[in-house]
Image: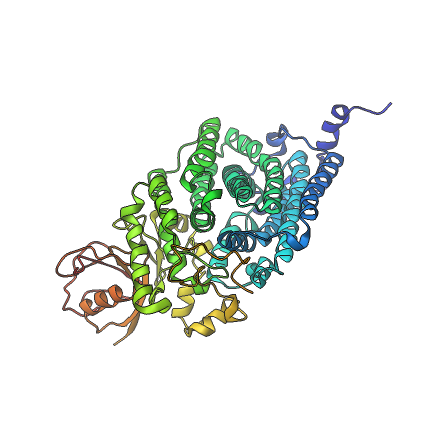
Length: 498
Length: 83
């Protein structure tokens, strides 16, 4: 008679060897497994709620993949993207490029835990997590390939992560810190607990809801499917935190959590915040970015903190203040420097302005006047007048433009170390640098490289240096500066590049 | 004279900007350049620009960058730009 699942599962998941010829510390060196280093007894109770077997995993994933492919087939590949809103097409181009290969990097992180995680159940779960992340690379690459017939810019789905485009440098800098150059404990806290438990609901489920509203159902299905994987392997974080806190690691956990909360927030401002509020068609916006953050991210995070009796990050007040403003400031920067992006950026229409005023009561005074100025510049001097002459000042930690929290509140600061002055967008970014200066000091922002002559100062050459193979690939004004754009609908021809 | 890179933050702007300038240039010229280079900046009022360093010290508009103590990688802030 076959054993029931629960009769053999624990035995299969808990295969931890007793080492006779090597020391446990040699098998799980601190540099790879993490600190505080604890003997296996401290990890022996490691468990999570999914307790998935490999057979179940293969069956479940097969069903999920079939669902995604069925939607793709049902919509007929040739007509998958007809009628999509032009702004939404740019959002998808942005999102796919920013995350497709980052997911592949995350597979390496899961595999590091699959080898150096301190309990076999952790290692089993991480093994499945690695397979998840490979899937999360393959799906956007497939959908990006489908979209090539609509817009050649979707080549960036695969290419972006390999370029020195400034935005991708920011993404790589974060993901290297979060999980590529991290030990098993750091990965579990930073990637699984903070980023995946904290932020991927926003990144995938909120965006899936918007994709539904934008009638992009294959993207919606893919995002929702990916999130079911994330929800499972994100569970690695909780039992790791529990063991660390029970055995003297509370201070280290709090540090990793504070650091990665801020860093995750910064990349979400740049990617999700701007895209939700400026590239998503009005009819598809179920909530504002701020509302999503409060309901889906902050509330969940506060519950997690409470569960482990952890403290709010020390910069919490600044974070809350930024919810109203930061992505609006960065959006102006993305628009002004749009030729350095691989997707187009819009100016908000009359209806979108009204929506922003309603959702962000201070937007009318803090950010709308800047869009007025840009429109005036367009009218007076054409497109060239609507772009900034000076380079943006980039933060030496997040690699993003040093933005004002809102006009009148500038948080930029500097730090001198070994004869070099570093610029930071905010005190949290400087604090992260100060905790491990040897980890971050050698890195140069794009601006540092330009000033040092390591990157070309000529704009056309700089575009090539950032990975653009032709002017057609560079971002522009979504509506191409049409005089009547605020009064006439944008042509729904399926994207800006034909 | 030495060319230095500075980070300018204009009240009424939303991002910091990079300016490369000779350290013999006047502080006032640097402030004017920053104002002219930002298409989306919003005038914040005042008759004369007020330029401060990172510590909030008000800089003499007539002094050179070197005399004002601004060196490579320093922050300066510009407020009170004429309407």
